Length: 507
Image (tube, rainbow, N blue to C red; front, side, top):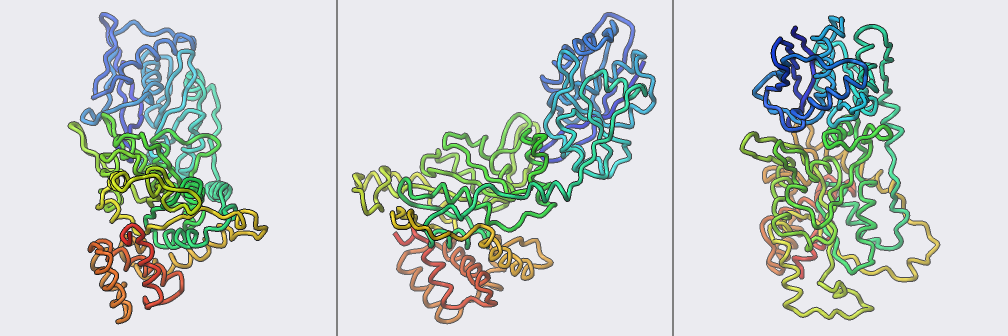
């Protein structure tokens, strides 16, 4: 007997439909899986056998061949447990329905017959929107994220017995329905707010400029000055995330298995803060079949690297491509995959190894050689790709004790949204999303300075020995400052502020 069940597998951020063909033939009992399965799929034999037995269905003593088509695609993960079990049951005569091959089925089986959650259900559901499948059968824990795709009927199943009853017509599964707009509005709120930050007005201004133009930013200051505190609140002043961006971000988090029933849609800008001991594979992604790393999980949001010089040099250098291209390409012997990685880089570091070189209250004990070695841990090419360098001084007691209310993130975000709206109007009809992404051609067209501004920038280039890339960054930041001011052109008043955001160059 031959049975066919539809399932799905992931390659990068895209999902492919896989046809699970199960054949039962006479002969010595064997179980063979073909079609480039990984170890977890080959191990499904034991899970399927135990789950069927504990659900009251004997495992057939036949020559069982499972083919995962198309055979040229590599498959991995435990999502094929449930479709393999249903295929065996239909081939053995326990499922009489002719509708099985019209549904896409995913799910991992527990030994007692429960259906457990799997990663990547949302991109699988998104891939089915343009197909003719009748519906999708998913684990109950994944039903909410799959239901984000409103065009696709989604049915949640908790056990293997429930799935069998559904196809035999003895079990009625209610369709999981999600009001995406209501869910988006409900979860689009931040727990962190700049109203909690006392003082540091010039740092807040620098972060506002960074958010308005999507500029990478580096905070430099002694321990306890509030660098991490403010960086964690940076997503709350980024432009409002759109529903399309939220679904795109949620899709990547689904692949990584980071969505839950309580948070089935990422409706806020993501904030990722990997530890400095992370590897290059953890940062950009990796694996036999590569999965997303931190730069992709930060897509449409913030990647925060605290204690920047403590990261290994090789780890920091792999950031160059995603910072320039807004995507990361991972090549393996078997496959090459590309993941989106349009993020804002926010980093923090101490000014010296002991941390107190810029602290007026404490004495720095570091030698010149120690400071040179410390700063040399971050390469010049990487620093050139960070548009804004700003010093963060210690907060004074008077500022901490002040009863005056600080400006809220919502108030700052209003100005940032207005600046981004100007940029969207400027770049209408082009793939340019914001000022930070401008190339050489856009710089010549949109970042012209007046005579006094050109003279001032020329003096800064000569005095500080700025690189050509730093020159371009200053022009981009000046364009963003002008956008925040509502100005159509960059004036002399905007250039000095942009130059002062190159702290490391000035040192």
